[in-house]
Image (tube, helix red, strand yellow):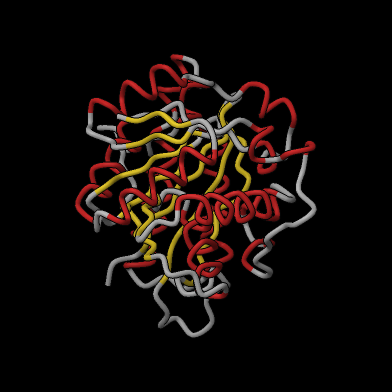
Length: 281
């Protein structure tokens, strides 16, 4: 497995593969890898003949400096995991490389969807996401990129950006990878204490109760959301939001016939958990 730290080496290898007729699948990560990330790499291997992963803790998508400082950096272990599953190349840029001079004059924004839900709770977060992903796409030039559906809003944002900017990249979503007790795998789960980890699966269970109520025909969305928020509080969470939204644009449902997704975010101790459950027909 190649480990590449600079742009020139990255581009040289990509050009070599292109000349050989290889197709490139890309998995961008912020490191501290878990089995969910491994699943992304394995899916990428099905879609391209060469797989590139990136490990970069992107400072511009953190809305709190203390969160950025506390985010675990486990580069050596991450590279070992990626090598074990057959990743072809890992791109490990530094903040100085990605943001020369401490920042960029150019930003990529996706209005509308960036201001909803996670965007409302974390101002500036999605501008940081779209800017860094756009830059990584420009560097790696992949044919396909794979993202987890746990970050449902982020996946929608990236798809919108790719459409709007006419990027010739297929965006593939991978269903959320979960622990045996239903908790969505996340690097932030490492912030949970032993006792909090026992409570954490209730987050997904309460969202599923909302889904069950919708399947049974309830359409009183605001009261249903409020009930879920109260249930989370009773379990010891500090809920940020529980929302029933349209899959198409993440706006509130209108006629009761749209495809829906239930999304939620809640704090448990130092960990901010997010999850979502799309409704099946």
